[in-house]
Length: 286
Ligand SMILES: Nc1ncnc2c1ncn2[C@@H]1O[C@H](COP(=O)(O)OP(=O)(O)OP(=O)(O)O)[C@@H](O)[C@H]1O
Image 1 (spheres, rainbow, N blue to C red):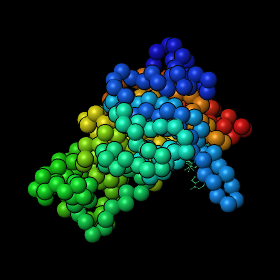
Image 2: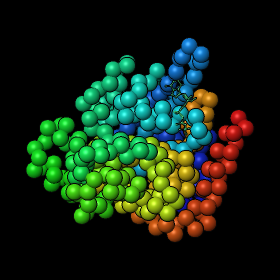
Image 3: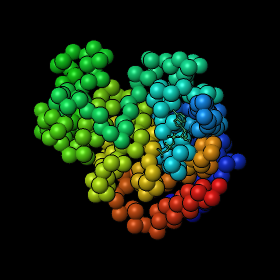
């Protein structure tokens, strides 16, 4: 982390500008003035307001924020599951949403991993991994070849014929990651993927995800409650504040990759985590 790292911290006023200056490379994902409102009989909730963010090819962006600040809403809009009320979402320059209508050809190029692995219990590991390829009509030989390669990549070589019930929680999440990667997604979207895992497994999965994302050069949007995890994995960390959800600051994390777990013991790492934690605590008072 450079001595002028404080420069990387931008508060609300500067967030719009800093959000458009990520690592070098082509824009993979652009959010322009994105907002989401929910209207029910009982309530009108502005879940997200004026989100502006550009994510470049190969970048890993972590998103943190208090419960209810709109993280999942944001990811669901990026995944094509929920239409934005305002603004535009562009994937490689192509609009994901046209009003409330989603462009399915863009969605089919996205990989999504949720907190629950959501595997099909009656399918083997390899069959689960290959499912998106089956849906897209790839022949069996080529999709199994790819499934076996991916099983190896996520550390499940030898388990290709196992069934989900025979796997640990961490292993099931690896299958979910491999399945999301099967289509070589333009974007990998992850919503609290390790939230249900114990601390040690989670730490191992952080290392694995770093390795996989570097090996595949994937562009990743990663939502987490865990500040440590966000900083460890992220090239940038986006902090959302609630009511309505807005980008409060975007912090660039300069530690070179691959990062070892020991980076977390470096004083600079501790400073960043503490500052982000403090900023999140401030959200409670808002
Ligand atoms: N389908 C919905 N209908 C009405 N309000 C909703 C809906 N989905 C989300 N909200 C509201 O939008 C806001 C943001 O919710 P969201 O689930 O995105 O937050 P979050 O940051 O992911 O929270 P958590 O960390 O607890 O998962 C909340 O006020 C929530 O009540």
